[in-house]
Image 1 (cartoon, rainbow, N blue to C red):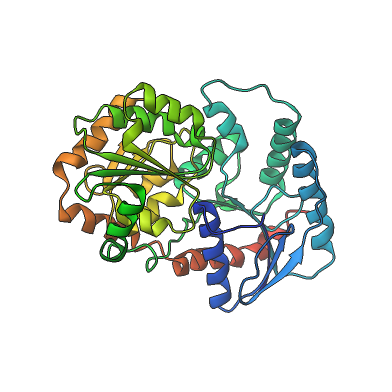
Image 2 (cartoon, rainbow, N blue to C red):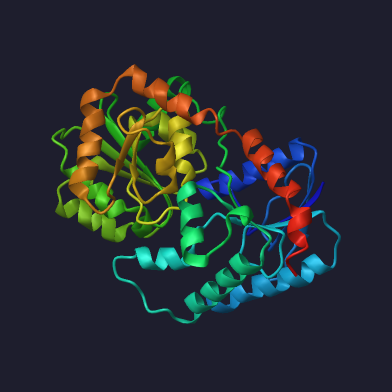
Length: 369
């Protein structure tokens, strides 16, 4: 099958990017002729034909509109069995709602912002995508319900396809090969119980709550590792105010997340809005329990008390209780349960689910322009 995938350039230092790269590679491995339409900057991928999406330097509002319009022009120039977009574009057979709903994201903010031009354009594109695309793919059941509620998408047009994870790259055995060196690099004592926060976009991912919860732990030898891209200055100041500044290692965006999962004992991610969050799968595959947000699609893979905890991301005391629960009761069984819970989420399973979506397209196309 000749597939055209529309996506922004993806590197390999973020969970979203790793998830996209894994899906694209798996589609190639399963025999599809994969073409990728993307702005400049995408690294070549084996077996993938790259097509450059023209996109001059523009302000954010104009850029999101230019992506949609230029993608529409580019798709008309070729012949494809399926056009799959990971962006809010004007013409596709399948839309993968990897970012969830922008409308729901805006509503999730503590201080809802004024809907300026950028947000109005994104909302208009989002509405068009959900109304006019034959098949919509949500990446968690929570996202499916959100799309149904906010946009009235019919059940027959809406499918949940969970992300895959690299079960070899993210594996409990990394503790043997990487743990000691990674801890030494971060200045973490060998015996210190260590919590890991992974996520770019610190406000949305709930870093402030994670720091507040970490500060509430009675274990004053514990450590917090922060991996991700964002302005750390306000969070460093907060950490200093609550007395945990010296116990936090700020590692920035890293190309080697598997080393930091190996260095840690638990992952915390109290996201305010998170369609899924591949960090959940990567942590579980690495044998780590996850204290997850009840607002994250990734919470759907957490069995409370078995491989993690599901908490209110706005309640630091609840997050702290989740952390303490695994600090006091961590066992080998928890690590094994975490690993087992990740094992069904292969890229092969993800491709199989997408192939079933593709098979439904012929009748669906009859009803859509």
